[in-house]
Amino acid sequence: MTTSCLEKRGIMSFIEVSHVSKEYEVLIPRPGAKNVLRNIFYPDKKRVSAVNDVSFRIEAGELVGFIGENGAGKSTTIKMMSGILFPTAGSITVAGLCPYRRREENARNIGVVFGQRSRLNWDLPMIDSFELYKEIYQIDSGVFKKNVDRFVEMLHMQDFYHTPVRQLSLGQRMKAEVALSLLHEPPILYMDEPTIGLDVMAKQQIREFIKERNRLEGTTTILTSHDTKDLDCVCQRIIVLAKGDVIFDGSMERFKKEYTREGVSDMEDMVRSIYEESVFTEGAYCSTVEEK
Amino acid sequence: MYRYLRLTYLFTKKAVKGMLTYRWSFLINCIAQALDYSVTFLLMWIMISAFENMNGWNAYEVMLLYAFSLFAYGIAGTFFFNIMNLLPEQILKGTFDDVLVKPVKVLPYLMSSSFICNYIAHMTLSVIVMVVCFNALEIQVTGRLLWSVAGILLSGSLIYGGLFLIVSASAFLAAKIDALFQIMYFFREVSYYPISIFPRMIQVIVTTIVPYGFVNYYPLRELLGKEDNAVFRQAAVWGPLVAVSFFAVSCVFFHQSAKCYKSSGS
Image (cartoon, each protein chain N blue to C red):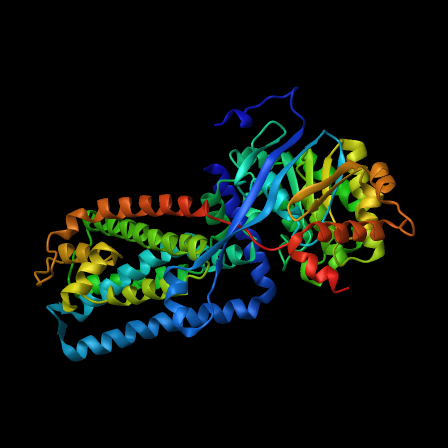
């Protein structure tokens, strides 16, 4: 185990991401029938960087929003912090543990919601999935009952609590997903686009729920969303990623102050202007910009 | 260990509960499977009784080969078939992430969550055939015989389990595993017959690369005292060792391959 992964509580922040990069190898097929064999045995490879020398620290109890275009590296960063992916370079410490080296222990500290995926048993009511998670996370019966009761109440799930998941609406399912990820009372919650495709009411209830959990339990939350209202409503701090780099890291007030310009006061417009600026700095994209 | 047994029980309970919501499809599936294998047994019996024997093996002896293979396949399938069936898609779509964010060991967890009881039908069918065959061959069912049978079936299921694991693990490396799947099932067909009837090359393959020979042919050759012209005549003694080491190597291969998981989506 490298020293960067040793527990250094006290000196270190709750979550430390330092100089982390993640590269993927992508095969580039050559066109044409004569290259078929070559593509199989000697394919041309390209290294694509998803995350590029990213560093940030997050303290316990913070509510942090990740902003970035599709492919900016938000999900990859979250996956590395969850222990799913190994970084190509750099190191990560989450609650004193190195997530990808001590995946199992780290898994007890985190709750994860991927908005584009469902982990609920499709044919059964949500309570059956909850019971499975009770066993997987070895949750004490008393704690389990207390949490289920509270989550059902807070997320207004009483009406569809006993309905098979396949008959639920997207919003109802996502509420159940959020509840599922917090049953074991993790100190850290990662949410990757939890409000994607939801209606206004469901979004609002999920936002309130995250804030409530943060206020009561001090759950450190990292949230990505393309709905700027989510971030505006929930997050105290914003980290902006562009092409795998951190281009802004600071409080919500500073974010707004910095990006409020003439004619730009709405948060969505601010985010768009950031994306457009990041395109200007990227040489490869200049031609598309000039065409405008 | 206890934890994963409890998980297996709970997963199975939920799976059965879920299946019962589609009760007709469940029932039809059971009937179809039983029919499929019964017909295979029947065809085999007709074919072999027409030919009298296959390289010195009579119809009942060849049926025994099939029954042993089917039973071992059933045990292994109970724990591993669904891993092979579901893992490639989980890897391709990136939903394998959900396993990695849980505080569980990957392989025991997959075994618990993929446990299926469908294979009870296979196993019942093969036991019936075994009893019928032992009877017809006038083999006394002694305690010693039962121990040998249990040992053979255990070795066989370790080999099948290993094959399931290797094919599943390849999904981490290659994403699509249809071809390996085909190879696995092609050689399984070979193992339904006395492998001494096949060309030398195939005999070598099913003894060394995909060791189906140790599932049924070699141990039964020893048990029934057959003296045919197989390439490897002393292979039976190595059976248990081959089975255990093959399974161990498969587990290691699975764990190493799982490290290549790259995730995908969102």
